[in-house]
Each structure stands twice: as structure tokens, then as C-alpha cells.
Length: 354
Image 1 (cartoon, rainbow, N blue to C red):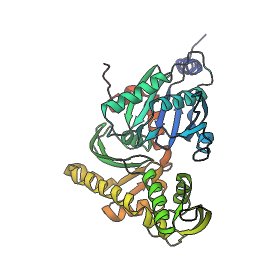
Image 2: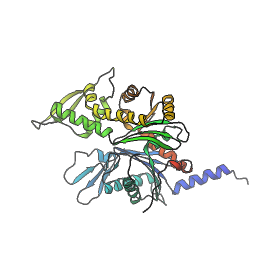
Image 3: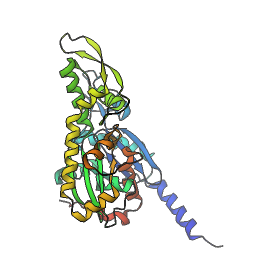
Image 4: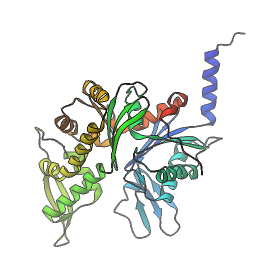
């Protein structure tokens, strides 16, 4: 009987995947995505958890919990436990991670997985420890942290190992990561806590100031997605917005245009373009020459905002490419690292145990 080595290795891999599920997590301020080895992206849900305030029991997590934001009675609390890309509520993140990991594990026998978590490049040692401790408390066997810009670059197939410089902009919900990457490392970077959430907040404030109307953050996000744009477009849309009148306290409806939304989000956008300019200024000349040739790559959910690539192109005079599925680039990159950890070991943060 002849054994084919490839067949044996394949069988061993299948057998291993039945018992052990390693996961890569993009724990974002707005959305959490989970990639499971050999299965791909298995979860894409909002980073929201709903709890019973009396029993502290988790009632819902993800999409179901997001529907409860701003609509809960006194005994139920819907929380977004991540703020500006880092943990704002340790217990809630642990609860959320445990719920999500159990959801994707399919009740395996040996269920303590190895976990890769993507974190902002400007994260402090204390914040790194908080992420690691949350994942371990949620049932992880080992926790590895990877900077988001590098993970996004790997996700969109940029050659991070080479000596060629590549610039990536990852606009998420809580942070905007701008980095120039070469030889498995970040050469220059800016990590600013201005991103999608700040744009939503700017829309809320604009409507309050100009129309005396109070709207919720979910309504603001919907406005941004439907008619928001970073650069003037040929088609200028209109949308009906419902909220509560600040003076009379009675619900009312207004009409909002694309031009007004663009005006509202001008400040957060200018902060992002300023950070891009600063990063380019700090870039060594040889790598700057590479960026002129290769252009800038954009990832993250914020890159889906209409015209944002045109805005960056106008501000920098460089070619701009938006990733095919920008909101999934980070978790796809983390998944690739998970599938071949020896190859990518240099991009993983080394964490000291106390």
C-alpha cells in the first residue's frame, strides 16, 4: 500500500481543524469581524452588547444588540464597549468576545483557541495588556496582537516583506491609521482618534445647530452611508431625517442634502488629510519615491465614504487605490497571518509577561 504524503498532511489538517479552531479577530470600535482558520470570515457583527442591569446577564450581542441602542427601558443597557479603537469597558469586551468566540467555535472538544487580535498602531502597553487580558478571560489559549495597518496591508496583498515602501490608510470607526510599511515594519505612522464615529457626531451636531433637531447616532450613521460624501459629486442626494425638535420637544421631519452632510463632516475629514500630510512629511526620501510610484492604498469601513479617495488624491497629488472590500481588509490580513504564523512572526507584537 502506498501512502501519498500530501493526502496524509491534508487529512491531518482536516482532523486538527475538527478539534481546534484558531481565530483572528478585528475588534473594531463599530464592527467586530472574526476569521476562522480554514473557514474564512465567519462573523461580521456590530461591537455592541446588551445586558440586564440587575443580573449583569448578556441579553444580546452584535446585530441584535445594535437594534437596541437608544431604545432600551431602564433595566436593559445597550453598550458599545470600544471607544477610539481601544477598550472602554473591560467586562463588556470580555462578555462580547466570549459570546462571539462561542458562536464561531461550534462547541468543539478542545475549544481554547489561539487568537490573533488587530489593534491600532498607536496603542499603549497598558491598552495592549487590556486587549490580551480580555481575550484570555474570554477563553483564548494564546493571544497575539498585530498592528492594524500591517494587517490591512497583508489583507490587500501588499508586499510587506520587501524593501519597497507602501502607504496604507485604514479609516475605521474609532481610529484612522496611516502608515508607511517596509521590511515587515512600520517606518512612519500616524494613529489619530478621528474616524467614522467623529463623522457621525459631526452630523448630529450640525443638525442640532442648524435645524434645532436632535437625532440619534444610528440615524447619523444612516445619513452618512446613504448621502454622505467627502468630495462634490455630480449627483447630489436628499434624505428625510426624523428627530425631536429641541424647542417644542415634538418629533419632526427635515430634508437634508449631500452638500450639507459634506459641510458637516468637513472638520473630521480635514483632520484625516492633515494626518496623511504629516505622515508623508516624516517619510524617508527613498520610501517617498516608492509611494509616488505605487500610490496610496485605502482600507477600513471609512474608505466606503463616497469621494474620500478623490479627496485624498486632490490633497496629495498621488494615485489612490481603495481595497476591494475595505471593511474586511484587516481581518483578511489577520487570517493570512493565522494560516502561516512562522512567515509573519516579525509583524506580531511581542508582549512581555509581568
